[in-house]
Image (cartoon, rainbow, N blue to C red; front, side, top):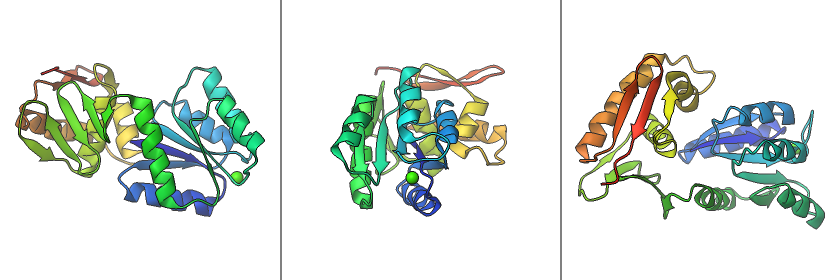
Length: 228
Ligand code: CA
């Protein structure tokens, strides 16, 4: 799962990125409302942690803009303010949850799990289920319903598999996949994608799934899911 942290306090932003990466999430940061807003618009993020007091324009404005465009990414507001009015107006604008600074990391992780579960609808416990494929984020293990085989995925394999499963039956370009899994500033080549897709194909076959990752010539890949 890829998380965007929009927070202007650099120390807090960097600490959150480190902690979330340590928990197996992919985390990026933005330092002001404008940068954060344009990063959300890329569609690369599954969840946004949004500070209210931000330079350029504030968190409420970010939320107002994305919701008015129909972008329904789950948003958890982070703020030093704790007044009831702020909480109410954030919720009115379409925030999914609200956390008052300072907060403890386990509290934030619990909120992230809760909000992401609510958003996807496709998870059982914390597991992501698409067609006959089941992915466990705690153990990075891929399962297939009706098969007793399972296989552990590496960190990048896991992030790539999760991206495919959350966007099943959609064509994902090599560029989208590279940005999503390796990040904007990575010098990963497009052929990394091909290499990792070949690893995942072997693992999908190993767990005896009927789902497959198809190549779309000149564009990228698509996960075709099988129900059984
Ligand atoms: Ca702030």
